[in-house]
Length: 203
Image 1 (cartoon, helix red, strand yellow):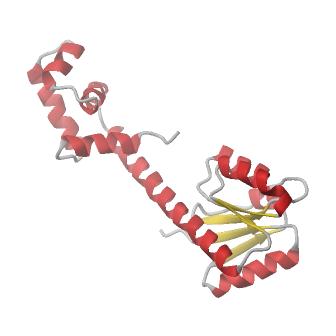
Image 2 (cartoon, one colour):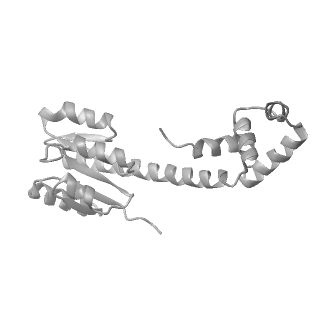
Image 3 (cartoon, one colour):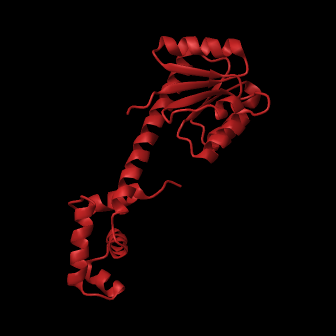
């Protein structure tokens, strides 16, 4: 089932919200608007899309919104709109995970470029997340001993070295090695290593 890609506009100024909605819908984008960061956080959202938020808002500002999304592990990239005096805080928001900030007043093309960059970042994040889930599911099929063999193979150890570490024969390790490759549907060692890296949760 394909997720709907949505641009979420968070701004306490209704005129700004509607102006941005009009511009983005003209570009064929799905848009939802929110009058506050809390109303956005309370709403059900798809993992596909991005967030376009004003920095200075009552109750919860753009930086706090970005931090809340990061704490949730959300994959929605954030673009912060800011006045000149808030640029240092917008930079802090980027360090906290926001993908871009727009200094007011900005051109329509600047906005569209920033939103498209955010949507591209979201697509890459969703692909990486799907690859991670698939790799983790495959690795979960391994027995404890096969898992140990996999980790040592990924570290570049030979069957002889693995046998010595695990206290068994190289022939036994070769059997485990063959099962690891079969269960993980890998045909080469580099492919096996890439699978292990894909299954490692991002930091």
